Image (cartoon, rainbow, N blue to C red; front, side):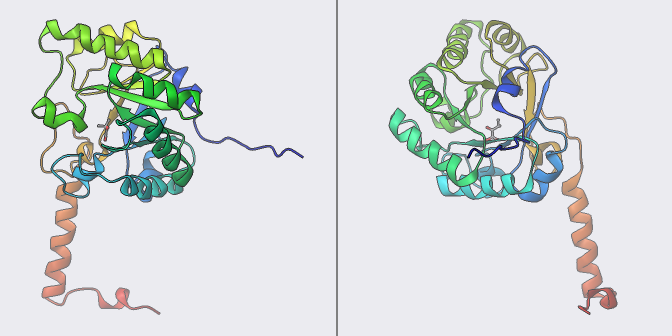
Amino acid sequence: MSKQIKIRRTTVPQIAARKGAEPIVSLTSYHAHTAAIVDKYADFILVGDSLGMVMHGMESTVGVPLELMIMHGQAVVRGTEKSLIVVDMPFGTYEESPGVAFRNAAKIMKETQCGAVKLEGGARMAETIRFLTERGIPVMAHIGLTPQSSHVMGGFKTQGRDEDGWALIEADAQAVAEAGAFAVVLEGMVEPLAARITKQIPIPTIGIGASAECDGQILVLEDMLGLNEWTPKFVKVYGDLGPAIERAVSQYADEVKDRSFPSEDQVYR
Ligand code: KIV
């Protein structure tokens, strides 16, 4: 007897169908509690490997292990019910061969129950993207500024400042679309190039530091909430959580020290 499964989350085909239509809203999230809030407004939530830098104080995303992505992926899936959850494949888990990529992507999907994975790289990753999508793993691609390659790129540098480099980036976008990616993140890219790519390819482009010309936008949640001391120049900061947390912590510290801490409320009854 077959069982009807009710799909509640935004699906990969629904995101793909938003090409040129209503802009796609997305944010990163790494925890169940923030994800539950983001879930009300986002079409998809990315469990980005930026968590290595944002949450774990690493200098780059290169050191992020697969197990960490899986643990945060599980937390975000548990905290949400509506958005598509996409989990980043960390550096070293997919570049070697399509077979290695499949094994690790399948592990991420089985253990987190996420709906898709994201990996960095354009034409050089096309064979792997095709291999995964033909075997049931939806892939979001990521081109332009690819933080996992920051050591090769010499840092986090805006791409396409020199028009001579556009053709290669456009070829990357074509290659991932042809290979079967359902969407592609365009990171750190000049506006006219992001606009050209968005017009050229049939899948949604998701911009981060790549202008409003894209089919959707993503930001790192902690950046837009004002939680990080440093944020990239392109990020609009919508909240002031850093200072708000500091105010709360310093008030608590003062109350503990001068014994004005509200002891009645703090006793288990
Ligand atoms: O890891 C991440 O948060 C990302 C976004 C910046 C797109 O890849």
